[in-house]
Length: 447
Image (cartoon, rainbow, N blue to C red; front, side, top):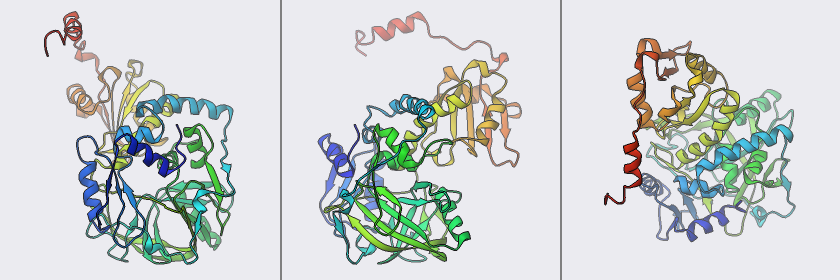
């Protein structure tokens, strides 16, 4: 099932008892973040939280909607996140036959039901999650925006999730990730000394959020990939003040531009590391138009030490990575990125016994290409060990000799561990027929 937009998905969450509404007045300055953090760290990820009355804004705000594996799967129309791997395998086969999946253009989109005559970014609910957030320039953050840009030479589109700090009614700062496609487009426009059009989107298809947070070589642009995940094209519309395309089902679309060389200090920003990302110079976004649905709901996420909502976006990406890795690297059986390590691409990789003796080479190749490139830690275990972190670490500690099995990258910044079984270890323990009998008669024993 593909949701028409954020509103349809929230309705589905409410029908399933997965959405809690907070009707009392809440403050976007740390209070919303504190509530969301406590809920997201509960044993089951809690519920999505809809704040209908946000101080300083007329718009409701929703957080934690992807904050559990069941809600993340539901957002993608799936029974479980494990279903993403066979879906991705089908997509990779489809791309070999049909490498493009163009979006569907819409003339009168829902995201343009209202066009604000005097756009005011300060009317949006802007979060501050930590006391020092945005202290250099002032102003709160849009934490779950889709930032749409295009290559100035080829016109190739990009959609990324980059934090946006709103500093005045008509200006905001874009916190590009270094090395991201958004930043690459910005540097190209800089070199050409041309004004860069940008669209900042709030809401839209859940599949587009996943696509925007995901990287694999050879995939089409995020809009096309989101369409492949949905099983139908993403409906798009052209901006009013530029040629950029944006999702037609968005809640809010902010159009604008970046002037070459115009920057201001953005940050600091409380990060998933448990520390503040330092303040740095960021390009200034100047708004030219703001369109929205009649009754928009603003999506946001809270950033901080895991587990948080973004962990489950990363878990979904993990399931998408596996088929690509299996096609590219012989012998890979499974993959896990533990929640506390996902932002550094740390991974447990299980391999078939046929790879015995070639694991160090595999680790170095994984560092060089694909989604695990520059992963800080890669632990490789046998397929029968599985990739559950507790079992994998148990196997690693009992199967490794550090001097022999540790692998360092050439610059010493990345660590690999070959924790596969070695010949001198003998045969692994096996389950007995008695164990199978007990498993079958478990309920008869009253246990």
